[in-house]
Amino acid sequence: MQERARATRKVLLESAAHLFVERGYAGTSVNEISDHSGRTSGAIYFHYSSKERLALAVVREQFATWPQLAAAYARPGIPPLEKLVGLSFRVAQSLSEDIVARAGARLWAERRTIEAAVPTPFDAWSVAATRLLAQARTRGELAEGVEPSAAAVTLVCAFFGLCTLADEMPGGRNWRERLDQWWMLVLRFLQADPDPAALLARARAGMPA
Image (cartoon, rainbow, N blue to C red; front, side, top):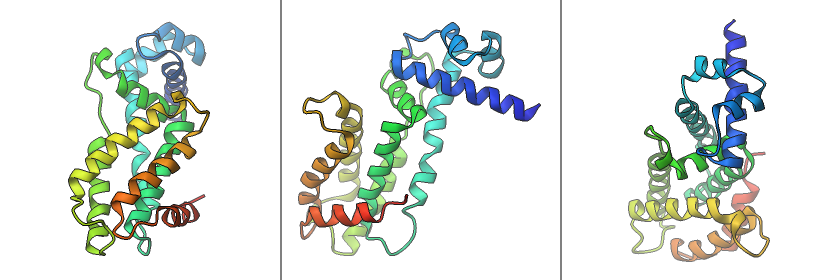
């Protein structure tokens, strides 16, 4: 029974995520989630109690992948700026290709339409970026005058904006090209001895499959 309940919750969560991505929170009804999932509206209310609770479950499921993504870059031997760049590509890939991650990002952007407090990943992202920038400074790899915590907040804000808007921008470039361009610009100001192209190449080569 527990396995069946988990399977039902997974189907409902993924169906809701698809619809939230396509139509947004306000444009999605419980009946539409029921139709898309093939489950009754009663099942939705039994497992999640409301559309708000289901939306929050989608957001939490998105954030639950963060430790797994970050763990791939916890091993020693990788320079911190390379870790930061590599991790950004993994997160961007998730936000572009994973339906639950995409839905979570859209729900966070639409959080004022949801009658519940929507959690945010940005504190964890900023802490991780601050730690990596501080390590880069200790190693003499961070440009003089760059303060890790302030720079981290700026990077996280800009990164999320890039991921959110990349597909809407003119020019026909995909998120990888946009992120490449962004790091080529940013690394010129972050690196003590700027060589963005080389660092990007090393980061890409070291990305987990």
